[in-house]
Amino acid sequence: MEKYIIARGIRVNNLKNIDVKIPHKKLIVITGVSGSGKSSLAFDTLYAEGQRRYIESFSAYARQFLEKMDKPDVDHIEGILPAIAIQQKNPVKNRRSTVGTATEINDYLRLLFARIGKTYCSSCKRHVQIDTVSNITETVFSLPEGTRFMVIFPLTISQKVSNQAQINLLKERGLVRILVDKTIVDITTETKDINIHNAKAVYGIVDRLLVKDVIKERLVDALETAYRLGAGHLSIIYDITNNPTDSSISKGIPTEIHGSQWIELKYNKQFYCSYCNIEYSEPIPALFSFNNPVGACSRCQGFGHTIDIDLDAVIPDKGKTLNQGAIVPWNTPTYSELLESLKNASSKYNIPMNVPFSKLTEEQVKLIMEGTEDFCGLYDFFKWLEQRKYKMHVRVFLSKYRGYTLCTDCNGSRLKKQALNVFINNKNIANICSMTIEKALQFFEELQLSDYEKNTAHLILQEIRKRLDYMIKIGLGYLTLDRMTRTLSGGEAQRVNLATSLGSSLVNTLYILDEPSIGLHPRDTGRLIQILEKLRDIGNRVVIVEHDKEVIKKADEIIDMGPGAGENGGTIVYQGSFRNLPAHNGSLTGQYIKGRKAIKIPARRKLSGKKIILRGASQNNLKDIDVT
Ligand SMILES: [Zn+2]
Ligand SMILES: [Zn+2]
Image (cartoon, rainbow, N blue to C red):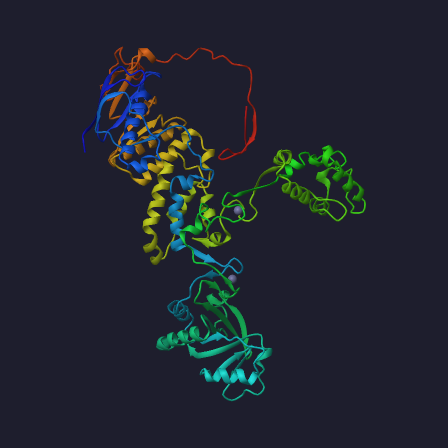
């Protein structure tokens, strides 16, 4: 790689035909008073040329989709690299973008959940998995030695075929015993008194065994046979008379056979809850993405909110009675007849017209919403309006009463129920995304995994931890992963982008940053500098436009623009190390930082006398604060 970016004869904006030489693997800080030409050099020259060259490296076909950039007014530039600008503007356009998706952390979470997430049945909360013969064998051997058990499979009994014919059929399939409700029946002898038509559950018995080492091969055989005969379903049923407190008892179903207590454990070859007969699909990464139809909640299409009637807009003042016009849309002349018909039916349905809306009973509100044969309810009213939306004035009217409401299917998590049934250490992906980044990192650091899980997931976990850690280092540990990026401040958005760049470990790139310390707590500036140094150390050039003294001090090289603003600026007053930054008159930055000149703070700042008052501000990370 070339050692320098060299540019000669730069005349962009107010720059006065200057030359600049930017060394590789250095942290460069461009300083100077505002208007001195810092941004002209950093963004309008270096970034613009980096972008332009980058775009030109694409094929003509690809280029037609990209914005064409003009060549900056420069005689000659060499050694330029593809450039990434990280500015204060919040560039987010995608309404669904969150901190998690922007930082790619969600991509890794999706992989993680698909690899090691455990699906739990939404109805009985049991772990749903494909039960292999070896898994089942393992469970059997975890039972106390000497436990009596049977390998059985469910039989489908047809009401159309006679009792005897079905039993004969079972005999032909090689069965000797069946389990009919609470009784074991030998079908080779005692078939006369058995009526399988009336039984609640009938099982074929493949083998009866005691738990001990020598049975392993026989057990595997029995399980395979049971799966074959039971079309992928089987059960292990074991006697707990001697071990009434065995730990796996709670997972199964208690059963009585010939007066003693047994437990039935159900197994299935499919991804299926055998206890509730619910089929699940095996988790794949797309299931955990609200940007993918596979995972997005179908009701809200992955937005977390639906556009519905906003009751707070329909009934804005719940202190008003129905007679006083609590239902605002029915106060208009066009729809006042609806209020009339409600009034006429009010005594019949016991809806008081002179009681504040907030004092109505749940039952009464429900009637008003749903309506009766005597009057139109609010739901039907809005449904009727929906059908007449082709009329402009109806659309305008409707828009006043509609708002975003939290999706009732996914509760704002934006994912299908199926995705929310998958857990890692008792947390589903929505639980993790609603934690602060600090909490999430703690969760992943304390995560206890089996050896198998560690092997399959450690690389993914490493990426997740690394990215969460960058976010904390950059002072954003208080954000949650599900925070919408469009609600971030410019400084926050810039730092999210910075963390993303670091996470993706791009090298040979020219990073140009616009005052990254703005909005940062002084405590976090040090960490920001570490991040910038890291970006440099992995093989990038980092150019920062900055006023902050702490950042300037850490620069490998300072380019000080000036001496003044506009026509009085546009030249490089100093380029070199911080240590050698002169305190002479040419460099204002030098004078400020080296203490010759201090910014005079007016003795008494003018006060306007006006106040801005905020009460109960609790959006995002504000905690119900009042500000005056
Ligand atoms: Zn279940
Ligand atoms: Zn939803």
